[in-house]
Image (cartoon, rainbow, N blue to C red; front, side, top):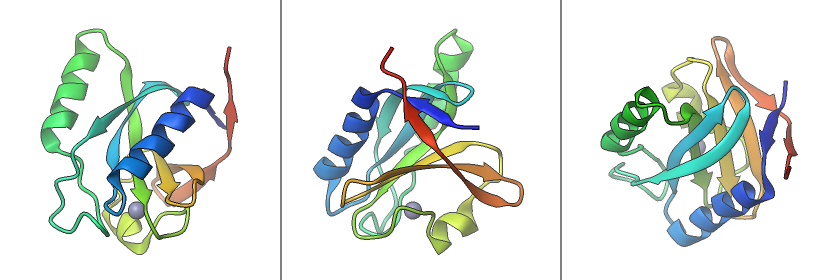
Amino acid sequence: MQVLVTSDLIDQLLRETTQAHPQECCGILLGEGTRIAAISPARNVHPAPQTHFEIDPQALVDAHRATRAGGPHVVGYYHSHPHGPAEPSATDRAEAAHDGAIWAIVTGAGDVTFWRDDESGFVALPYSRDDG
Ligand SMILES: [Zn+2]
């Protein structure tokens, strides 16, 4: 299983990360299955945004409402690690919902990795660029 993304989408993730620095950026991944078609940036409402993230709950409500109205599906979430490695942190693992969602993690160094939040923990997902 692999994630399909466009180069534009990767560029957007990197831009969000740079703009939020030194805070973590976060948002929602939209698409179908493992094909990610778009990102929807959200406010990081965590009280310690330099080291944690919490997607603005209203953004999640809006995204799910848009899905029900026929829009793209919420397939997962992204956030950045301004200084951390390109893998889920201990906090990420502790807070994961294990709901099968895709997580993208973007580092300040410009790495992007994708993970599936499975019942047994995060599983790394390779990705390929599909620029149509
Ligand atoms: Zn994290």
